[in-house]
Image (cartoon, rainbow, N blue to C red; front, side, top):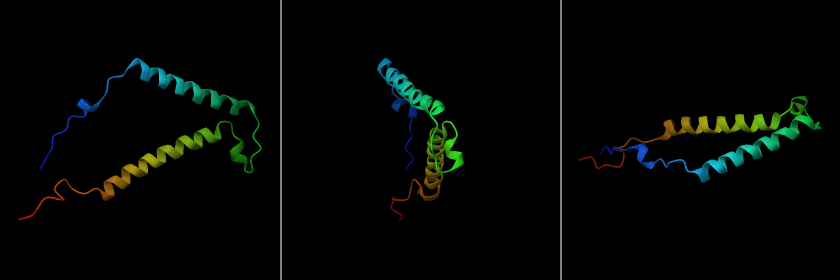
Length: 87
């Protein structure tokens, strides 16, 4: 059984309140990134002393997790007719 889905019907329009929250998030991210450019970190490894290293590491880790989830979904996803009765 094939169910036709229209992803546009689930998409909510962008509201001003949502854009204000997104802008506030961008400002908070920028404010947490700026001090790392001026404060000298005392790290155990040399590469951890690079400016904004932890922010870049967190971003790259997030991207890797999303890509791994996409790959795992393709590997373990079952077909649409998996639970249908076979007569």
